[in-house]
Length: 270
Ligand SMILES: [Fe+2]
Image (cartoon, rainbow, N blue to C red):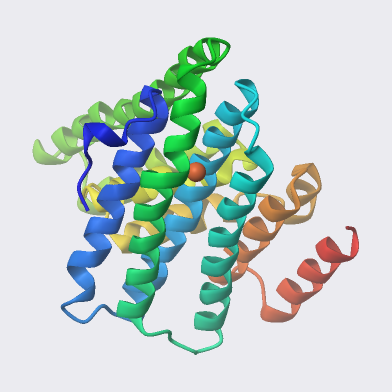
């Protein structure tokens, strides 16, 4: 699947996210033929969940701001995909690996159908409704700030590489400073925006700026500095709370028992 200008919904920020979504599908499709490992599949799916969540909320904001009449149904379609992928991830955690090709094809079909048919309806509606113009400007600022945040890390990394090259720092120091540099993304975003930080790291991983080992080390290093119970309290959204505690478990900072206890507490509070 390739991006085609005919797929534009008329809002540059959303179009850019669709382009990234299509690129993702493409990447997943290209590795699935050569025997995708369950670790890579889980990583890709996690990225898709985080990315889709971010993209869907931007798209839902657009629909809301232009008074799109089919918003509840469209939102439901988004939630169904997130739910489906979340279920698969949970099954994989329990050791049940789904057929990768089947899964990838499901996702590709979903994105194609959704971007080509459902999202086009938003574009058509918004082109006839001028109140979407303000949103469009705001959304572009938001997209720009994500790419600016990501781009701002690179000169700092280059400086670090230069220090190492001219032997002003040792390899171990370089490694530690690199972890600290990427960890600063999370610190600046704060606990309420951890999923944005995760999607930044996925972006750097896909562009070979960090390795998957470094990605893990960055997240673990950040989590270790947090106060799990206190920070959990400050997160308002249930889903974000669950992602938060799951991260602690995935990085083996808390035991399975503690994870189950916290998860139960979050769900009981609903
Ligand atoms: Fe959509």
